[in-house]
Image (cartoon, rainbow, N blue to C red; front, side, top):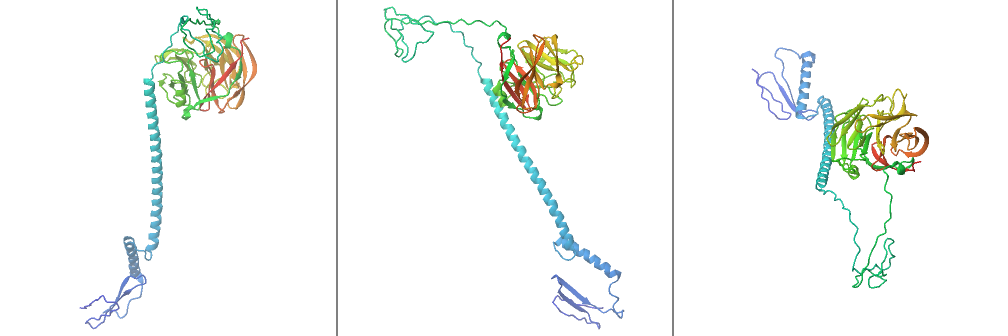
Length: 476
């Protein structure tokens, strides 16, 4: 039996007690790792087998694999493990960078949403405070008529210094014969006499009830557009805003109403207490209409909203007080849903409006071959009272409005400087060409209507609610 004694001393050579000698060396290799080398003569073989062979190669492969595994476990970077470790580290760095980038994006999105939430909370708080203010706001008091005052007696009042005698006052001598009761000195009380005051009354003829005789001439000029508000969402690119010229309780005459008309489910009607609240964006009422709205041709009159039902020629009268449909009727032979729109499109086949003479519908039909037809409607039943057929094609004009029974058409909806190019008078059944300057400030005017309550034009120009002052001539 061969007995070997191994001692861990650097460079030590050990010998056994057998006849054959065994040699053991220990030393550092090139990478600084401890390596043991020993040799034992074979008792049977006369010489060492040939170096290499499949067994040795397999052993080397297994040893190399073992070194790689050990290097990965211990973090070493020797030999073939270096390439594998570098590749793995590159991949890990890429994954880490990707995850870090995604985390940063999510963090930024979180911060943005938190900011939007804070903005919405502030907006809600402002609306709550505004609601409380409106709720606590007292109703305006009506000023009673003041009866004429009786003549002053025993007052002895004189006029302030430096002023001329008011033209509507006359002086009477006092009872003591002092004719200088009006003096150029401060008003003061005199112990004697009295001053009698009398107002001169100028007679003014009462209106005869026919507004056409005073303000129903042709439009002479249109003022610059005044912007009141911009819509908040894409649904407000097109729309209609309006005011009831004969408002009915519970809504006051200053109430402004608005409908955003982009989308397939247009049925929300927003109400604002006055123009100031519209500008601030604080609606005091939101009504959900029972039928979908088609385009920008709606109008208000005597407490009702008049509008065209989507994809039909049906007209609807919606009562604001009861929030229900009060009347429904088809407009005979009228085109709808893109058959005879204005030149800008938008399914503007039927355009409703209100002026001094009542409720109107502007449309066309197959019988009229695309020419504009004007019909005056009964505001209660929506029946057609009378119709006029013009000689101007509806799709050749951008929009229209009616004042005093006269139809006015606008040439372009995109040109910043366009004109009102045609007037048709239903009183004479005659039309004529005109050239009245008109501005499309935001270059996409989808709605123009006469606001009888303010004697102005209301328009919806590319998200913006604008108004125009008007100057009308005398009725001929």
